[in-house]
View (cartoon, rainbow, N blue to C red):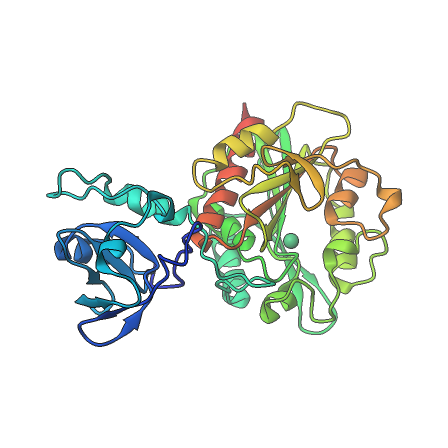
Length: 374
Ligand SMILES: [Zn+2]
């Protein structure tokens, strides 16, 4: 259940002192990225839990331990051992640990894993630099699981070899309709994976019909780029419909019924936490707060007062809906004008572990389905 070794978590309040390198008994020089209290036994236990940490400096019992090489640290470079042993609490990513057999320390394995999931990785640098997905196999998986669970599957053919996938599930008991889109930006992998996870779980309320476009920009995913292969930002093309993908997508949408709620799954490489845009011009009861509360259990929320230049309230952005002032319409504008009067654009923070972001999208979707099924 623990992720393979990947990028290290970023200690947000890292100080120069904490980053001082040290040398271990194998002669390798490292910088501590995470500091916890405990001796070698604790170090080994924690290392099994946190495989993604390349360097874990374990303090306590007068011993420092390098987890990756599994050897003692012999020589903190530049810094006297007394200082290394006593980092101020503010530089620790979490409280000192309590591990079984070490009374006086403080936490359990599950809590440790959760805390690591809730930490920034510190990888994104001017763009998304995190994990990528092989979109062809994700789409194959989506189609296989969709057909196994008897979803209606449509292929929206595009010029060339490309096509878009659309799935729908409309039992006769339906009283509400939800539309979900993902993968319109090729450097935002959490959305397509979240859709995949929900299809595999196959736990849908019988009263809600669902239409899903799990990846609107397959060529962008192959390039790990926001834009498609022709360098168009598809999420600015819903007025003029110039790209093949958006023109085809809109032609398909026109044939679908209207929806009660639409969800567009996105990620933001700069975000401090999860946030969402709500377009709800008729001011029907908002789902924004229930979504934020549900997501907060699994992913940090960006509670800044301004996000992307818009006023924000606890992770909720409600920019004025003036499509005439913005020729580069996002998908949500088209949806609100044509298909649905309540639209959410969900943004997961892509500098956090992918697992955390997928879970945030899954939890948000489940919350919406639950609200509508009541
Ligand atoms: Zn996006």
